[in-house]
Image (cartoon, rainbow, N blue to C red; front, top):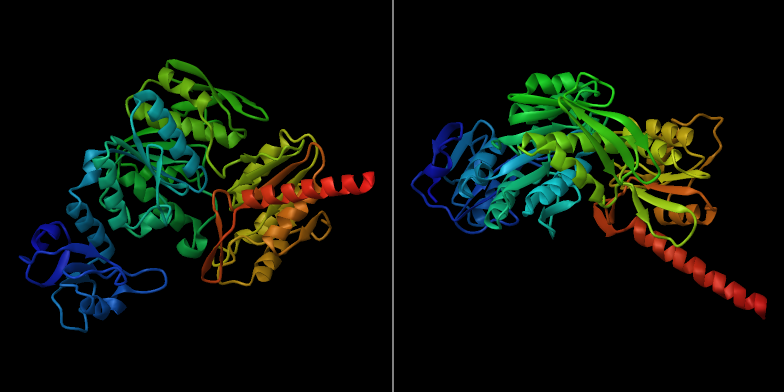
Length: 494
């Protein structure tokens, strides 16, 4: 493809290239660039692509898109924003796949994964077609999982993924849209058929700085959505509504003026049961995932699919067959009369939600094991320590993904938020030892919450990602317990 065709809608400041040049591809990472490709220098978290232009030239780049003139001799195009340029030319390269799909974008602090999976489930049941999904738990075309690195991929990978979904026959795509992706223009240029707002609680403040800036980043989605679904029970909903470019549909539990309201809510140990009330419509909904947050997630999904043109009477019954999402209030089989749950809760609000939900059905004690990620928002650490010890009967504070921070220092910051009179907690730095220690404490009727890792099957320690799965640790420890019990029984018989 010729350079002139790629940059037609890019805000070019200076062009020092032959736009008739044909390029063989687009690349923004010099480690993967091939001969004849166009290199786009973007500024990242830890480094700046402009520093690697010389490497790009050495590896075969024929032209560079950048925000400042390169120091080496190569044809170049200076643009106002190279991230937006990458998104724009990537869409052209893949033939504007987003325009060939109906796209739902879901943003918010908590609930994104659950809502996207619920929408996918409903659409699959209402259309009997293949649905694309892009999110934290992975990227899917129908039931087939594809590789993923970010909650929302970089713009080139995003367009490539959308193109793949078009080729494989998807008509609908549901995606989680993170605040980073919106702020960093990874989804720039995509017009959403429906944009969804779940809620906003403190998270990613190490990146955004303040809750107001965090909210403004989230609101970008609604300026680029044809219609929007907004949770008006959330205090930040006015910011989202103010930015909304098209029709609004609101949902809530407490706000009786919302377009879709959850009423007569019945919270049970294994499900939620409620009435979804809209103008001229009342439908009983049952979702086999416990917790008040499941009511909110259901309402968001129902409103979304209604705006896609489906009848609520057809939507409501499909939720009963929903099987949940890996790492979200996921029950690990143990063969014992206690319960072990894995949940991704890694923010104060999410941790409070899962513990409160469990308290509603636990027959005896609630035991929580959790830690906080390193190189991330430090303000939430003491808050999570206070919440966990206040709501749980017993807490073990441990390691999550420490990254480049000292795990003990992270734990010290968590402990700083705990009331000095609270003694019902223990610190075990090693996560595997913490999980095993918690399992040894369990009695009949207890519920153990392993929070923070959720669907993740790794730990990030330093700059290394090592295999680690809470489920595997639980299964192996229970296996060892049974072996030990059998040995003890044999010894007693002897």
